[in-house]
Length: 342
Ligand code: ADP
Ligand code: MG
Image (cartoon, rainbow, N blue to C red; front, side, top):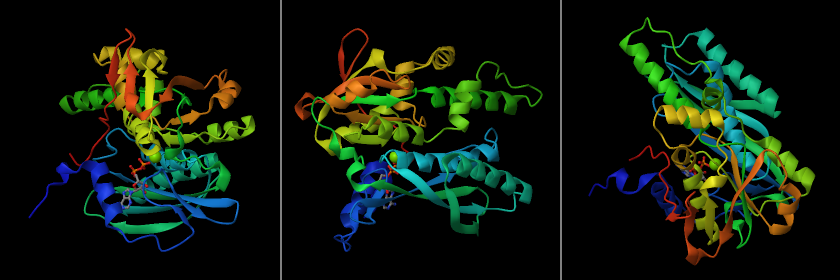
């Protein structure tokens, strides 16, 4: 019998892989499949964090508008983001690539220049990887290794009723940037003489092409003496990520639409495309901001932080995962994140 992958979807498939695996063989494996990183015991007080991500041409990036320099940077940033999402500090990466003769030495130099810039920015070392050929497309896979104190690891599963829900930075901009670049690609393929119309769109385009992993927030939370009760990075859109936290923690949530951090630039761009900013923030993806929960007592310490926004609070599971609209209506939040398999 043949079962279509689309019946499972990406998360269903990952659950299935997890269930089919052997019982844990190593005591040092503190957390396996199911969070932003695996957590491995290093000493009594410290853990090693490991995460890996593939970026595939035609699925995750389009080289007609993605400079290789930016792609190299982004491949590192999105992995660093997964370590930040565990409240950890990244230390090393390995980088594996599959390339075809379509790419020149200079092109690969550009890719690795971006990787180097990211390594300098995030203070990580490139310590290995693998190189192989592909028939045509480019694939880049990065594995990141990080560290955290065992007592400070933030899992998806720790959110408690009445915790405050926080988001770093702003949302929906990468999705707005994608609309612009996809439009320009169409215009260009129809008429290569056309010059791209990108004026005033620097911010949203940069958010798509050069996202940052928010290790700065991890450091700031440490300085404030805060350990988030739960945390995840926003790669697939806020909706999908809040559901991950609520499912893993066995809780519900109220999220207020009017609290979602969306910049003016993002709103303007989305309005031009007749797209709804809330939908972009909830389902757009690729923002790589941090979504986390803190206890009420810790909330006092960060409520005036200019780069962290409070968007709601954790409720009992029975209340569901709910968005309160600007008009005060309640809607159940559903995940519509990117699902490459459907
Ligand atoms: P993220 O969006 O944070 O990168 P994913 O949704 O890709 O996380 O993965 C969720 C969890 O499933 C992670 O713990 C990841 O390591 C694990 N995972 C994903 N794909 C596989 C796979 N093919 N085999 C084993 N574990 C996987
Ligand atoms: Mg993640």
